[in-house]
Amino acid sequence: MAKPIMIMGCTSDAGKSFLVTALCRHFANQGVQVAPFKAQNMSNNAAVTAEGLEIGRAQYLQALAARTTPQARMNPVLLKPSAETYSQVIVLGKFSPEITALPWLERRNRLWPVVRAALHSLLDDYEQVVIEGAGSPAEVNLRASDIVNMAVALECQADVYLVADIDRGGSFAHLLGTWACLEPPEQALIKGFVLNKFRGDPRLLGNAMSWLQARTGIPTVAIIPMIDHALPEEDALHHRAAPVEEQINIALIAYPYASNLDEFDPLIHEPGVTLVPVRELERLDRYHAVILPGSKNTVESLRHLRQTGLAAEISRAAQRGIPILGICGGLQMLGQQICDPGHLEGGDMPGLGLLDVTTTLLPEKVTAQREAHIVSGDVGGGVVRGYEIHHGQTQAGLNVRAHLEAGLGWQQGNVWGVYLHGLLENTAYRQQFLARLGWRGQTRDWQAYLDEQLERVAALIPASGWFASKDTG
Image (tube, helix red, strand yellow):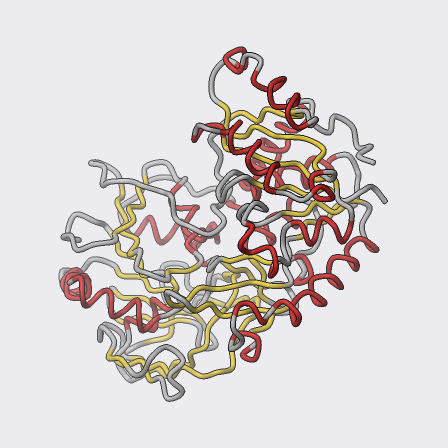
């Protein structure tokens, strides 16, 4: 077994997830049995494993990059924000009400044994483990509760590589300052610095890397160029766009606590289609369709729609015949009523009334990979695949008809609501959805396209001279 490799960043969004993904595919391409690991992730972008367990979407993708099966032990703790100061805690793929109820500083004693066991199980089963840190290891105020950064590195004596986003500026100060915040045993684990998202001529760096090594004793081992790619974002929607004439324009309602937004990436990357995140009130009549995504707090997201006036505008769009698609929490918002007897999300709330369904929020969470037949629509009888993550149980009224079998989706006129995440990643379904809007293109196999993107980013590793061979020990 090779020594574990750990990627830490000077800041959030330095590119840790991206580099772990690239390294996983790089090692897999060399025939190494490799697995990703992130002890604790904070994200509302979650996926479901074959066993029905939740993990961060980033770790799910990293497992696919490694050509291995996504497993809950690859992300043993997942924090899903559902209020300003509240996050649901997922432990080994399952919601833990007990740990969620604990104050932050009291959680470590419960979570560290879980993290440690998951880490060592992967070290036992794989030739190479590539570990991702979170945020920055220089957050000295969080050192006592750390279960994801240097605590993990020290536990397995990983070779740590510290990454800075050079595109932001100040990268050498970030690297030097982060290194200086570490304790001597932690500094000893740092094997190299990585400059990520570099644009332009490397000669512009001058002697900065020698300057840094003279002060730290640590070399800069790789310069990774900035490239455009279609890999999903880990935990936020950075995509920006405005409607484009002569294209199919789709409004994605980006309310607070929106979840699993990366499932709409296939629309972002289809030629002739523009997906526009809508956060505040605007007229929706210039859009060909409106999508309401999932939400980690459906009631609060719905309250935001009403407070901004978007709720009324969505209703007007539906009345004008614009297709409306709600997924999971979006489905629940489109219904007549959200009943919350246990105050999971703050109490009952009337829905938008565009679908004749009623949802009751229950403590037990549904998490499962699903396959379902389409029973209404242009590809009736076809099969779609995806996954469920939700607390609600939805009952259909007399005015809707089934769209997906087994209570997974309904249709009422030009309004559709489904529980199946990943619906638009299905090639045939995305084709008929866009064709209904007047699109004349041909959809591509999204999973095959993602695999092409994984190969592109993996090629950056040997091109930089970093881990040019599979001997990492």
